[in-house]
Image (cartoon, rainbow, N blue to C red; front, side, top):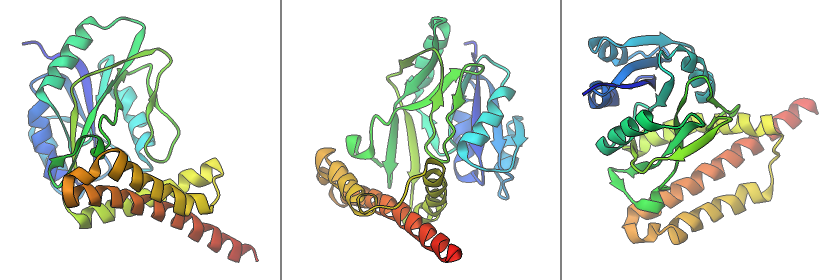
Length: 258
């Protein structure tokens, strides 16, 4: 079977735990795989080199900047961004093959759902499903929005929704989750400052509680036992810490100015 005429871009940094499995899942189906590395210090590059993949390197600023730098270096018209801790369902690969082969010229992007796993379990809506991701788009038409975190691709043309999913296995243990989120708090703080958002009672208390209520009760987290409670609670902690970082920043800034 012919390979799908698209370029997969995989942003990586110390991704040895996931990378080999991801490459093996897609390498036989896509025309090009481009590894965008942020100067890994583990075996990430060895794994990529073992598969004879092209590697490009750039110092990491934020996700959107890194991906926007990599996108023009793709050889193919269509680009598919996959994070190293994600795996496409096999039916998603075939769905993309059919999509690329028949897509209309007025469609510039396809959203795909994502199944987020927590300790290996998918909990449906409590895992934010369908959590649509703007990952498949025309190279010369798509660009990530100027956000420090959680940026999506913007296109001028129309877009399509795919049915099959990326499986996101990023939560494997509490320690790595906490370390990762400490980086995200900084990105969120930078985004708040960029947008002129100030600390408020609503941001500090109401939003985290609302997020917990929505995930645990409305999205059905309560039906998944402790895992469901933990997912809701970890998002409460996430938004509480983002607001706390903003409070701390404003406190330090006011002391410097006084």
